[in-house]
Image (cartoon, rainbow, N blue to C red; front, side, top):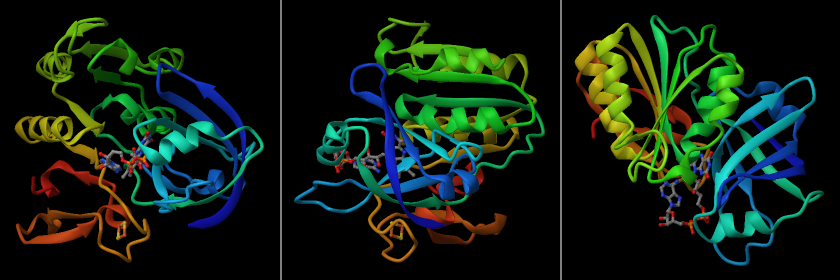
Length: 258
Ligand SMILES: Cc1cc2nc3c(=O)[nH]c(=O)nc-3n(C[C@H](O)[C@H](O)[C@H](O)COP(=O)(O)OP(=O)(O)OC[C@H]3O[C@@H](n4cnc5c(N)ncnc54)[C@H](O)[C@@H]3O)c2cc1C
Ligand code: FES
């Protein structure tokens, strides 16, 4: 893990409230693996000066560029949205246990909103192509799907208001695909309800399901226990508390005690 000063070199607005930031952060870009995150000190926060965690959206060791895709939700991300190109930020990372990159079946990636961020990085590093299932409340929550298509991934979309793709939850197209081809390995990032639903399907089909948890974090380095999640250890059934920041954020479906 590196503690580095990174320069913000590009800001790309997506749909309303979402932006992609590019940082010059060669130390982190070299080490980053899909599923890991960075802990960002947002300048100009007078109150609530804690770092904010963001998944690594992409990283290019050749250029030293590190990418973050974020949504404005509160105080910290509102401040992040006001930063201009050239700002220097303190960034800690890469942190956490990444997604495994050796699927035994077709990779099915499942995400919603900014949950698509680590899935893009994953899609670029997996040894085989698969299907991205992406869901959201409305079309504005469906992000970057064309990029997945450009690298040969199939994309299936569901929105709750039916404004894009199938009307309903992302589990609708996922179930259709699992029924047609259950020889898959699942990877998911998004809200707890979605993760739980994906995990249940992995267990029901007897396949692996890797879930990236989104827990409120404070230190981000395993010291404060703000981010604990009850898990079953090593298939023994013994329940223990894991720190999502350093023991996760990626866990296998069978480990998580919801
Ligand atoms: C491992 C990890 C990866 C993440 N990756 C991304 C990403 O790639 N892009 C992105 O946009 N966001 C990501 N997040 C969430 C992001 O960290 C929060 O949205 C951000 O910290 C909110 O900061 P804020 O000051 O704007 O909001 P606050 O003012 O702190 O909070 C706004 C609201 O969001 C809630 N909240 C804050 N943090 C979290 C959280 N971690 N989980 C659930 N609710 C929260 C608060 O309780 C409050 O209701 C990730 C979180 C984790 C743990
Ligand atoms: S955030 Fe402090 S232990 Fe995970």
